Image 1 (cartoon, rainbow, N blue to C red):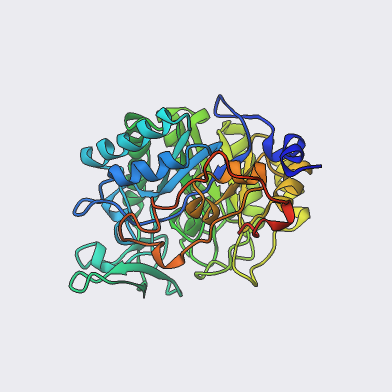
Image 2 (image 1 turned 60 degrees about the vertical axis):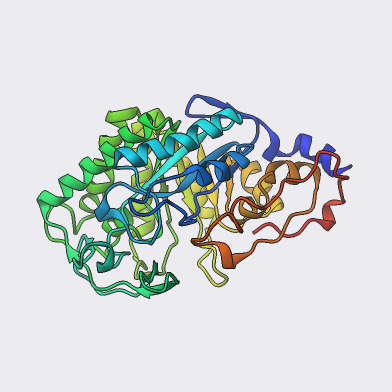
Length: 386
């Protein structure tokens, strides 16, 4: 059977419904920081709009992580969604993606301790607790203009009144996302950022109602979800979680049962989807099939998985019912027409990691789509998808 014929029966190329939208296939463009917003002001621009519109054949696009406030910023040149200029900038992207027939969610984040005083007028980044940790962020030197990974300092602990302010910032950002024309929002609760920091015993040493017990460590996540869902509707609210993350000081012995309990809450709240990110470095802990079964038993709404998937592994996770969609990151960078290439067995372009963060159109919008007359190749000739 040809690759094209095989794709007709592949679970990757069957329709599904997410957030009330019927999607033609199940290949999602994962959120991926690209650091190309206009400065000053971290404002999305026309180049960003072109980048996303080129990739509108994804079943769903989730944008690069977007800070909900100045306090939420942790990397140079990442976009925000708290100022009128940023909202207007994002409208360029949503209009372009919708004109190309795509669907797009904004990923909302607050990085918490994964930041640097240079982004905050010399003030320390914030976190649930003032705990030293091993973590780095990408920062551009204002004199040389060169970006590099730099260590994050020990943060300061958020006051109880400040926590309510952060929840309000998530609510406001969700409202701004609707004004900017997004189809929904994905709250970033993964990868060692602020919500994740509240979930874990290694980063949350609080003794008030936001720390200690599993119920208390889940309180901030629940408050953010409730605020966003109340503002824009649960059916347009989603969240990304990272159950098996151990890096960045996040190796919490209680995280799996904590996330399973979160899944029960998210199911009852009726959110649009749950996005589970799998650690993608070579010796990372692997998602166990036992955990996949456990979280699926608790969350029956759409699940998106991401993390170094190739076509065969994506088909396996879909066919077993452990996920409903699969998100790909780097393949979408170098292959704006990635779903078509996968469906037709077309070759994949190589990804240039040196142009990932910052810069101009090079390594961003200059990767071409293949011409429609491209002759399909055998599946064995396709490069590994990572």
